[in-house]
Length: 246
Image (cartoon, rainbow, N blue to C red; front, side, top):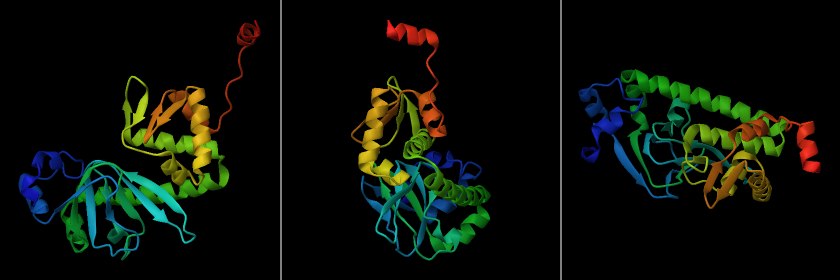
């Protein structure tokens, strides 16, 4: 199954850069390939955490349903990321579902291999530890933002995070390089589809962001950063006031 994989593609990932060809071959021997169409789940919340994965191509979203039945987009998985690492956190079940937002390709290993895998692949172990730490930090930041920030600030921060992860410079501006809907943004920021639609429409009128079906483009990064930081817009100069009044 792994014979069709391009070894150089895998080796160029930060996780595997330091490995020899023989070590890489040993890892690939037990790997299973998951080819995912848009909307397909790698695993579902509550299922037994019997595998861990590395994303090679595409993008995934991690979705969690709260005890109250509310759906929350926790984060997005980018190429080169480790995911499904419930074993690293000593959890027997996956705490969330991971779903492809576009056609994607991942490698998976049995969770029973986790300890051996990390013991013999120091880069992977370091990256996994960093991933766990980053997720804890993100969770703390999310709680803080939900309790202290206005909706407009939260939405601006969420779009900035996506740009930082997967922004692509184009003639229009910086486009988030995978499909994302307004509902996704609402579920990332603890608000409603109506509120996100209203904000994005207002930002479009001000030339900050444009959006369409599953597409978001940042046209004025400085202004979006100002919104994310909760800073007031600069007051117009006297000269500007005079020109506008004329």
